[in-house]
Length: 358
Image 1 (tube, helix red, strand yellow):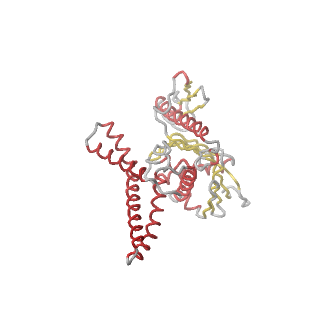
Image 2 (tube, one colour; image 1 turned 180 degrees about the vertical axis):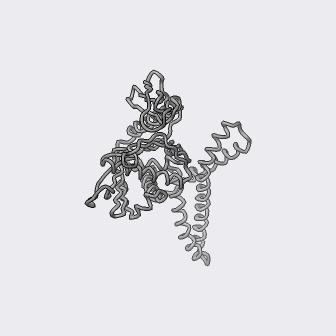
Image 3 (cartoon, helix red, strand yellow; image 1 turned 45 degrees about the horizontal axis):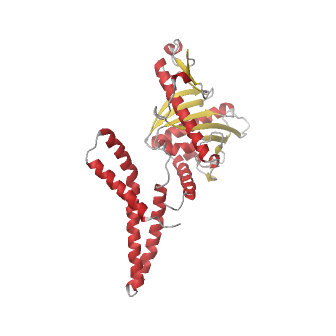
């Protein structure tokens, strides 16, 4: 792989210095917020660029010493080997930093976990997955708020939808979209047979009003009396809301709040995020016909992972990675190891498609 052009490094360093100078001049509030965000994004790349430029300079100095010969040549040769290894590492690091970013990576997440095939066991597994994500989120310092939940008859959830609030939540959680399969002996199994069940996970970047324009004429809003637990005041008023987006046929319903207005706002938030995800998928599909095969494609019909409890094994089928630490991963924080492996594979795929003009 060719060396990174110094002109490219100079542009990064110059832009970072410009942003730093503009920030020091005390700009207005909205400009300050915009510049602060750019500063935070540029800082690691600018520092990496400065380190790489310094390494290139040192390498040229070593070459001069080697050409001069004499007593310093032996020392210069040892320095050359060390510098070459350092430059390879720095070049790889900055190529990663320069990869195109998903505009949604820093967003909060709407997480949807649903029981699939397998009856009661699928609902129990959906509950296990959701708790895994709750504990993983806690380990990252993120906040989880349940939007709606439908309990399974014997535990777990038929469906649970939640907001995850935290910097970079979507960048990591997006790799969880897909079909998760579990193989284990259910508590109700008397003959010790292993059952296979499944749950689906959808991870949507939380949309803002500016992302998706929704016309009132495109919506049908139905109100009805909520059902299920919630107390008398919930069940005796028409507080539940169902919103249907007529052009796409997407429909969302909310009934967890006593207030019809709160349920409507929650339903609109969920609808907006689903429409935003639909539009992102449409654009991605146009960009690449191979999207389904990519790590992190978010295709919810794809079986992405198997949790085999009798063997204590978890296998991610997208990258053919098997870890014999199922108990630790299902507890939550150890999920990071799987996600980091998926992120590394995704970065490797992006690097492979990048041109050498970096």
